[in-house]
Length: 337
Ligand SMILES: [Zn+2]
Ligand SMILES: [Zn+2]
Image (cartoon, rainbow, N blue to C red; front, top):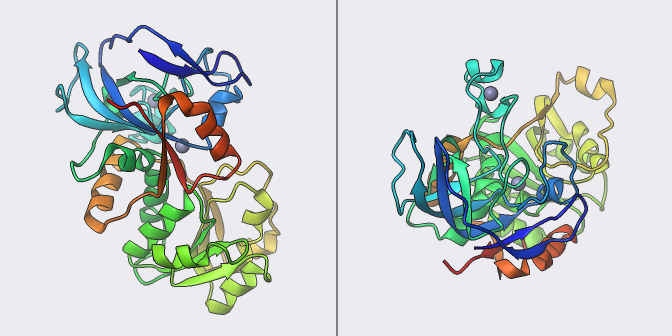
C-alpha cells in the first residue's frame, strides 16, 4: 500500500510502499478514504513525544471503511462499515484513570499517527475501542476533520459550564475556531468571534457568530467585558500571549478553555482569576463515543468543516500549507478509495 511516513524526528514526509498491516487481537483494519492534516501532526513530524516510534505514519483524523476485523473484537464493527478514528487511539483499561472510567486521561493512551502508524496511508490498524461510526450523510472528507478539530471543540463546549443563552467567545477563526463558532452557535450560545484584523469578520458571522472582536483594534478583554463578559472563552490560538490577553474578558466564574496547543507559555495575573473566581482549564479532544456524538450533532445541525482536499501523495505540501497557516481551514488528504 501507499503510505506517507516521517523517517526520523524532524525528517521530511516521504511517500513509500509498505506491506498492508494485519490487525491483531482486538484490532480492526480501516481502508482509509480521507485523513485530515492537524497542527498536532507536528508532534510526530518533529518527534516531540518520546513515545513516537520512527519511521512513523502521521494522521489522526481518519475516515474509512472496515477492511478486516481481528480476533476477539467486541462491539458492532463489520466489514464495510464506515468509521472514523481521532486523537483517541484506545485506552489500556487497567491504569487508575481507566479504572475510574476516565479513558481520555489513560496513562497508556495510544494516539494514531503519534504513538503508532496513523492515517496518511491507504490502510491503518487501530484498536476497536478507538472507532466511531460515521453517519452516511457526511462525506469522508467532511467527517475527517471532525475526528480531532471537531470533537475537540464540540466536546469542550458541551462539557463547559456555559449554558444555552450564555455568552461564549471563540478565539481564532482557523482549523479549530471555524468549527468552534459553528458548534457554539448551534448549541444556543451568544457567540463572540475574536480574531486579528477584520479579514475574517464576514466569515465568522456567516458561521454563526453574533459579534466580532478585532483583537488588534483594541484590548479584546475589555471589548468582551463591555458586552458583559464571557461565560467561556474557547482558546484555539497557537500563541500563549494571545490566549492570556483574554482572561480579563471572562464573566464571574467564567472559564478560559484551552484547546489550542499554544507554542508559548500563558501568563496570567493572579488577581484576574481570584476576584471573578475565574478559571483556566485544559481540554483534551474526546474518546471515540464523543467523536460519534460530534458527528451526529454535526449531521443534525449542518455543521461542516471548510476543507481543501489534496491527494495522499501531496501530504508534504498539505502539511506545509497547514503549518504556514494558509489552509482554509483544514487540509484533507484523500486516497481515492
Ligand atoms: Zn488533531
Ligand atoms: Zn488506561
